[in-house]
Image (cartoon, rainbow, N blue to C red):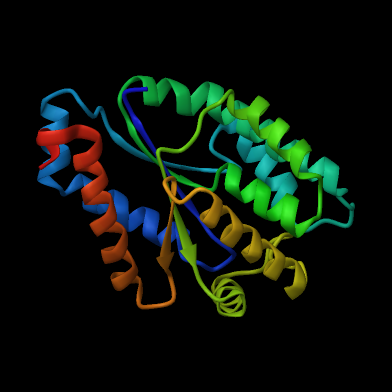
Length: 225
């Protein structure tokens, strides 16, 4: 597709939301993006998230993350995430990418593998099949894995607001999730780039911008140089 799909992944409190906002502001202030827009190579820079990137997704996000007295079994959780993703891909991501948008997305398929596969212990083959169905084959062009110590990340998350249903899981769960991201980064080094998310957010943003600047050249050639 003409557009580019950039995903931000990581455990709770890794700083994804902050870095997506910083990256969007940096791109919009960049002469490179302005030049690419003038050449009709890029239509817009837009942010989104999973779950919750569509009107239906917002309802699913509330079901998935809001603490409740009703237990959500692991398979139900997996299928709700898949439904959110299918709606997101079909009605939001694909049309915008086809129009040349650069999309910055908070979580995508790697989160499902890490959280529902490694964290919940669900069958990896089942997860891969559901991801394939939900995405219709759409993969990220680049994924930033914001790597931070699990306990540090959870402390950040608990400091900023009330815990959601996923954040309330025990430490062992979140450590398994972190292991999942580590394994994925090793398995897909061309797609997933590790970012040290422990320093000050400004330094983290500089890491991301340096890598993304080179990728823009790789993707758009002389227009981005």
